Length: 594
Image (cartoon, rainbow, N blue to C red):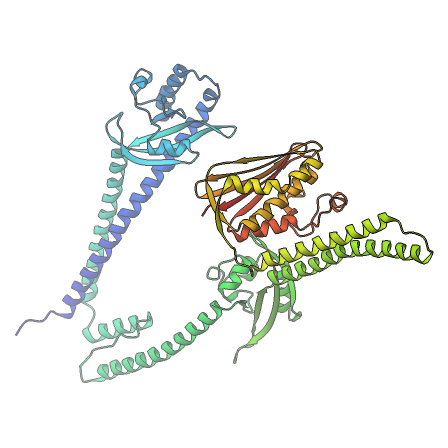
């Protein structure tokens, strides 16, 4: 019969294995952690030295014709002073200072433009690399930063340290970690040996089982077959653990269902406890308030919710005022939201204190659409009322002339007809804008070349350009593109028409197009008076006019740019405007070429 190990020996060996594996894992993790910390510390030191180099050499590189001899000598001096290899590289990759080579060895150094850290620095970012140096023939850690003057990069400053130095430092710390771990292992084993002599088998088993159960491992069972009260106690512990496991499993399942439900609600939900701490906050509430739903739990709600109007609403509930639901404005780092806040008091059985359940609904889009609808109705009514009033006035004047037997003024009919035509254009533009916004009419894309397409668009406006005494030029590049030609022609026509209307007397309007990679760019430019900066963010709004009086005189509806924007976006493109007062305005359309 094989000899069994004693409980003391089992206890000792168990601690030996567990402690050994744990310390080995901790040592391994510590090694990689220390390695990353050593490298991070080295990179930080190198970048600090590179900043010193950049600040030192920036005045010397500000000269259009820098004196290389002086820069090289300064590099030798500074390298000795800060105790590290430093290098200064010009934008073309030539080295003008290197403390490891010295002034005499600079002519023989290779071009550094293709070194990864220098390449990153010359593009305006911080460059860090670990590689073998061709110059000093050993592996080194490099860090480089750009040297910029007035937004222009005039060179790169680099600092480096031998990798062997970092390796020595790493192994020194590693030996300390492993030595400490070994000492800890010996201490653990000594303590386990001491305790193993004093602990009896059944009691140790029940103690270990009870400890694991208390830590949450309810699957643990006590295995004792002594035939006495200890065995009965062990069986009672097993029954208790089984009952607790079933109860906690049910509670966990219910909690998981509730958390899933709350996490996927479209409304934000926050539960504030009586002690003013946040008991629960779902993902939507964190999104609305720009806060973390996990980091906020357990903290006082004023530390998590940093929005005065929302805090005022919550304060009212905490004080027992029970305010009615209200809309509050919440400004986050990304945007401003309008949130509808409502609340209710939650009381739990057997507790005197009550929690406050708050719900937050983001109504920003709802309010925006309501405002857009209101503005649209108001603007459309105003735009239609003006020509209708004019038509009615002139028709009444014609009616009075007919009643009096006098011939009506022919100009009255012309004015009435002009206002009717203006209403017709406005209604046509409204219909076109409605179709563009709804996307109900699919795009009928065709492939065509740039030159004939732009020529057709320009030919539509040449009579009006000639009548206005202005020059309309077309600059078409090579290549073809695919688009809904009718809609795109309408978009460009709106821009050309505006340029001809609002450009300066005897000025020039340019319609151009070209292919750039996988995109097609169209531009409409004029040399007119330009648009003030305060108007630029709003010029694509419906019915928005920079010069309202002049726009109506020229027959504009205020919808052309809005229609153009929707047509461009329906093609998956973008439109932007550049304008300078007294110089002119340029609209740039960027569409996918295919």
